[in-house]
Image (cartoon, rainbow, N blue to C red):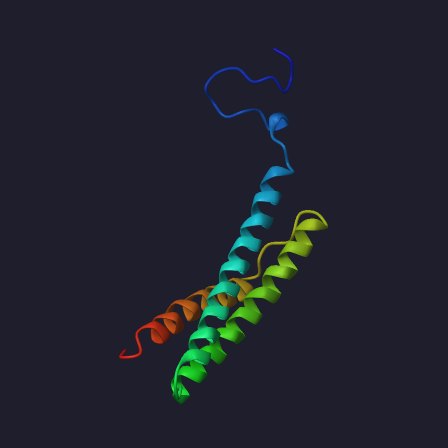
Length: 118
């Protein structure tokens, strides 16, 4: 059996792996998540614009959603550019914590906007 050939039910040999597919899937996942965050931000702003006499809490929640969207978008853009240039460096713990915080902020603030009685 020649080097790189694959036989059996086990994982394929390292030579059979296309290194371009995984970074492409990751880049697409970043784009999809950024698009979802954008949709949430637009819907939150739309709800604020349609409400009669929005309270200070609603305005603050939409402002925080906007800040979370901006932070998430900047970090995602930086990661996608790094992937386009080759293998990106590991995501720094600070960036990972920031992204997790943005995700939690989207969930909490989204619930606050949808369920104003909370």
